[in-house]
Length: 85
Image (tube, rainbow, N blue to C red):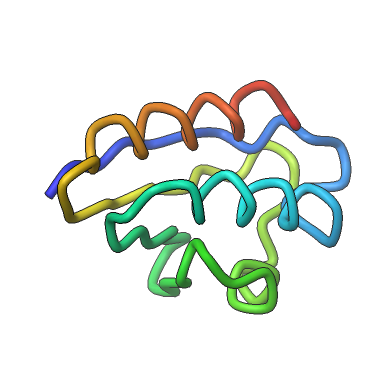
């Protein structure tokens, strides 16, 4: 299991379009990937799940992955959040 914290940079937070881009990137990995905000955890491969986090600009998220490509997945997804894409 690998974890990394990332700060949401997108002005609109992690809603609709940014969530869709994040899910598309997450689906490229075979690992089980979760995004955690506070006490709430979401499946990184589900836009609806991600949007339930209600992540806004400057919120801190923990990205956790378990699987064969866990390190690569966490690094790439944390970078995506940090770039505000």
